[in-house]
Every structure is written in C-alpha cells, then in structure tokens.
Picture 1: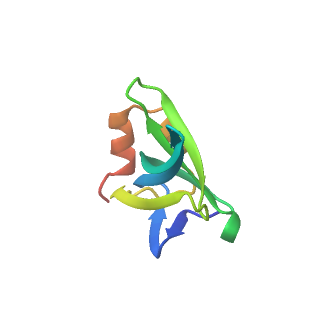
Picture 2: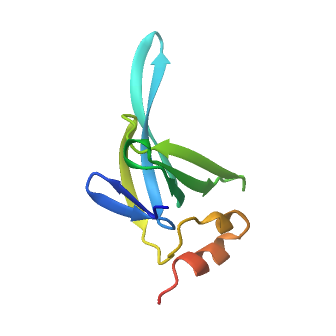
Length: 113
C-alpha cells in the first residue's frame, strides 16, 4: 500500500489537506469554455500503481455533508494539486475522518510530535 502521491515532482501523503484544481468543460451560448474548479479536502486514500494510481479527497460541504471524490493521477483534467496543510499522520488510509468532527480531525492529523 502506498501512503504517498507524487504529482509534478511534489510528494503528498495521506492526511494532508490538498486543493485539487479540476478542469471542467462548459457549453455557454453554443461556445465551449473551460474553467478550473477547486476541490479542497483531506487526502484519505492513495491506491494503485504507476499509471493506474488514484487518490481520494474528502471534504465537508457548507451544509455539513461529507463529499469524497476519487481522482486518477494521470488524468489530463487535473490542472494542479496544491498542499494547504501538511499532516503528521503515519498510516496508509485515513478513513477514521468520516466519523469525527472538525476539531477532532485537526487534533489527530496535525498534532506536533
């Protein structure tokens, strides 16, 4: 199992808070436009190898509903991945964040050792 994700020579690990810029095509008044939509959340899972590697990012929407999205690493639709906050979490998966509140998540993922 891999805990790390490598994208554009930068390394991200499970537990980090990341912002993923995803390209979206829209048709407005008969014209095709492309824009970048941000999806910011906690990197909960990295799975696969080489070209088949995917990662899952979980965020909590403003209405309080948890949303998880799976992104393929080699997708041409990913514009960027930015690190928002570095984690000290040292396991391969972070599924426990589904059941915790925001303050408990911060206490577990970002504590200083």
